[in-house]
Figure (tube, rainbow, N blue to C red):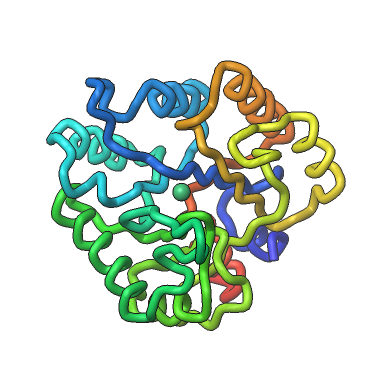
Length: 250
Ligand SMILES: [Zn+2]
């Protein structure tokens, strides 16, 4: 798929294709707007010149201060960050395991997607084109709900067996940045990457809101390693376009 994509691209892409999928942006009331960790994470991306994507827990779009919306708008407009739909409540029932996209009815899942899309338009002035569910949960209703929202074209860590509408793609998970979750792990990442160096792309999930200094250091090592491999860091929507044009030969 990749070699086909290369043969049709103006600029051939040599190294691995990477999407950084950073979860759980919220409004902070401590005056920092995003919280120090997110600011540091975005600063690293800017310094390293890499594109990243950030999932917004969309209840934060309901009640935040204007500065939150302005900051997201400005980063969106700069084009280095894609913000995406990460549901609204991010709640999970500890006993049943039910969450917004697992165990909820098709109507409820669709309502969550649509309300988050509407909040983005209302508060941010743009539509999300990518979706990733809280906890990466899904069930058989999730694909049906997504089919009803075709403006969501990219499903991060979604159901790779899902029947979606033409133009919608699942960007699946392979090797992990955080091992375990919330802990970037350079050594394990390199081990896993070197064991599977020829995948068409790598979607790397991150939760920078919970990292400490050591975890940021591990993340930086991974970025430097990938840059030495001539990786291209893409937005989810860019990778989706690349995969679709590879398929159709455009
Ligand atoms: Zn999350």
